[in-house]
Image 1 (cartoon, rainbow, N blue to C red):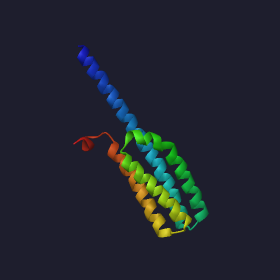
Image 2: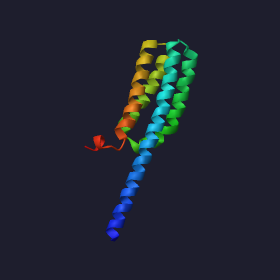
Image 3: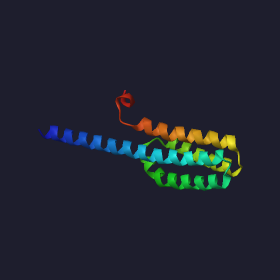
Image 4: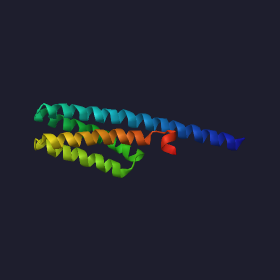
Length: 126
């Protein structure tokens, strides 16, 4: 009976942490994608100063969530996001519209894809 209770507690703990992991990654990836969308809108309008301000916002937002993401996902994926944000910052400061839009699209894809890969589901288990 003790074994059953211990297994049950471990299962509940595992499922609870998996649920928290999923909800946290989903919430923060939506925040990051939303911020990237704001940058995209500014770049499309050639509002470079506003776009630069929005990049600073996404850097702050990413800095806030990065430490927790390091515990939850592969560090190479974190490095990819860092690299894209820094490239985006440089592209916007150089006022390179096409390159900026490409980097924004890649950033949006990456944050959504990483959150989707970490969701506890049968597709991700098998």
